[in-house]
Image 1: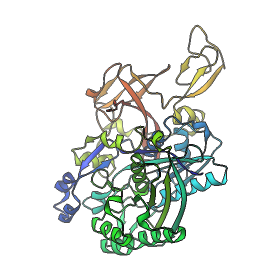
Image 2 (image 1 turned 60 degrees about the vertical axis):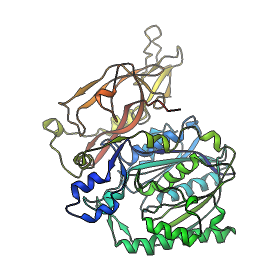
Image 3 (image 1 turned 30 degrees about the vertical axis):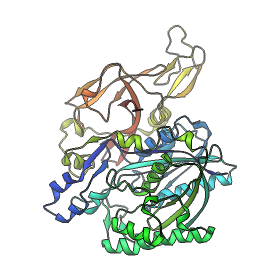
Image 4 (image 1 turned 90 degrees about the vertical axis):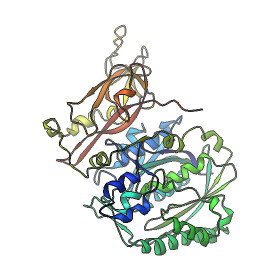
Length: 486
């Protein structure tokens, strides 16, 4: 039996009320008020598709053996690199072994389901080998555009294999069309779309039923046989039309999270599936459909193991962990849509020395430290000599993955003089649980949220961006831990 063994999701902390966007830009395009309901999830200034994919992957791999992962796939239409495999960055941050298969998927909004299908086929062809599929997007629409109102940021992740399967993969059906509704060239920053009626009537309302009916015809099913139907479509009228064409009750159709997150591009059908699995019951049939340059339709059947995975992972945790972003101009600066003045300190050349990055790549990507085999002392950064003065063993250490351990605040400060897109820059010393102490930035918080001794989690984030060479560098930051509400 091959299928989904674990799932995870990620929604950024900050949410932008769409009426704030309309209040700022409605004078230019008043019609955007038709999409002004609710809020959209907004990536922080130090987040992008890679960091959100890692966050979803960390959620998915909670309690899992990372050494057992045989493949890592990353799906996005907004990956930061065209020639540096993004999936390898994700795999390194997740603490996976070097001896794995990795691949990037892009070029279409159905890239997420294409990656999931490839992961399932990989598992089936390799005696159930485990693969992790991460998807995330951070798409941009021009100011005062419908895309700006609708697009949101987020990610999702799944582990597939043959052990402890929570949703068995039963089959799929795909259709592919060179149908241009949304378009973004290789040198284009903003999404461009064709007429909405074209997208609704010829796109969503045609291709989704084609994929669903194709799957049902292939396996002798009816759309009404499914207990939960998951498909992305941010047009309310089109969703009603599709439900009617499929002859399914609206109650069976998964909420599209448009009013709380927005459309997260290639990640969106997977994000919706993660949300559906949080409340799924054994025996239920789930139909997952993507949309973009055609459709992928996947059939899953929930197993008895689902209750083991419904432990707080998924989407609900991140939806509850929210903060208002009440400043539209801050959103523009964070997304690079408005150039700010950062002062002389912001003009420092940020050239990356790749030989140094390679020597320390385990520590940088995976927050990998060292643990002395002689006395058990844990240390970060990793060292050849044991940090315990009573031991001082040389070359007697083994690597240890620290990104999922968390820590506590030892010192912190807010610096208004440092160049930052979200001043003040907040940083300090963090004591890692189990041993080791290092300097870190704090993110997703204010100075008032911090206190010495307070627990923190670690989050993979953008450390700095080099605009001169178009290079994004990553490292781990500390986020105040949030106590789960029981």
